[in-house]
Length: 367
Image (cartoon, rainbow, N blue to C red; front, side, top):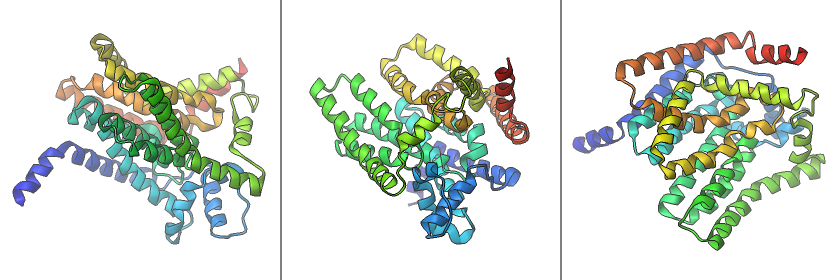
């Protein structure tokens, strides 16, 4: 039995190290920043009270994303909205696991998967909002879960995964809209595949789409019947330029956020891109191409999403960064990781007091 335990620990050494690091990082986040609340945290807490039958006014944007507050209900005895933090802790470890497994599936390299999971959990949006009174971690989970299930399906061709993936991806929209972006990855990976003919591709995408739409349509029906409001109404009020900020400046602001969410890692993203360009592994290139639409979907939203919306780019960026990082010498690796973590924590600490993105945006707006 001891031999089996040792063998298991050896086999899953890097995954266990990734989860241990995630735990230590979580302790650091709570120790330094505490239980963080933001402007929309109160809106989620109000929705929790409304779901409990409380006489409170709710924001329609939150009614359209009820899954996080609904999952928080069993833990509300810990304090108002505490269930949001509890579920985010669970999602935090799940996304650590999923990032690890996705990288392992693509590159067959456990050490690279370890670095990728470390990059993810120490990114500034995770430090800022991943464990806060928000629902972003849940959306990241559903998106990553869909990527993982798609890769698993292409590996073993189990058609039941299409139905499961479609339904769970649609359920992710009930957490936040970016939680459902896995549908884009699935559709493109099927279209890029040489293993299916045109009829099979259409059938698989339609099957995914039908089960994807089930939870979304049910929620839209409820929202329209009782509130005469749908997700389409919300989007028209929040699309780029709807608040008078200008589409160009809105996009420019988001592109600025794109560089800050991964910080130092951009060096390794470019190195990884260069390595992939030289090697021309078409199986991996198809994965990168399939990730692009979802990764840049933040350009469809208004300025209100900030780094949380832009973080949908992280899986694509971390794929490349981990590949560019893997052949760095150990001493340089440790130095880069240490610098990255310190800078990310410092940035979050300062950015809570002075929003650099807002300052740059306001400056450009005056030009």
